[in-house]
Length: 201
Image 1 (cartoon, rainbow, N blue to C red):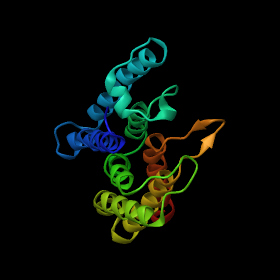
Image 2: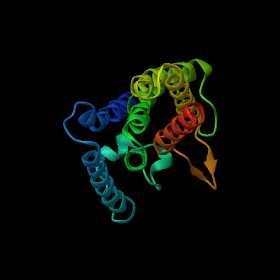
Image 3: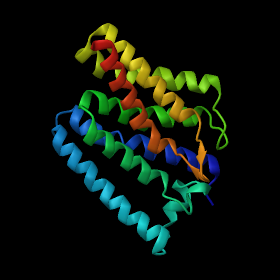
Image 4: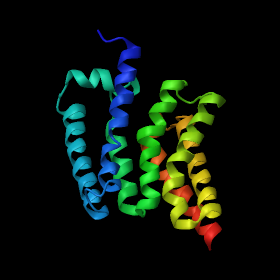
């Protein structure tokens, strides 16, 4: 039997490994369009796996370690993780989308290791402060070269704030938990794009 703390660390390591996808673009291994295709492929694969898990009786042991209790009968966090990154890859320019992805793949696991909160409750202020700082540091190198120091810093801060809010609490809507794997990238990217529109225009 895997201890809860060990299982949580495994979840966070798997989470962080998702940085490999945006790194393919950052390192120049694939172009942005190709990365989008890869994300679509990943989303298609996890959709099949989730259909088999939820309706086809697929019960791999790894699901017990990497899914939470509230995910047992709902779409699991790893699938939402793939969907949210695919969405931002297809909708936003890379200097906006990549920070949103990294806020999920790096910022969220760091925040999770520092502290969690029951569903519907807010994480501690100290954990939120670390999440904001990490997310700002992830966004700034991408946004500032495009928008300039002032506008880029403002946009990075607004995006980091969006990611922090999305990470800080999992609201329950109609009995369904809004997982931060789904919300962090689109909220962060939308916030960055909106801030750039307001500040630059």
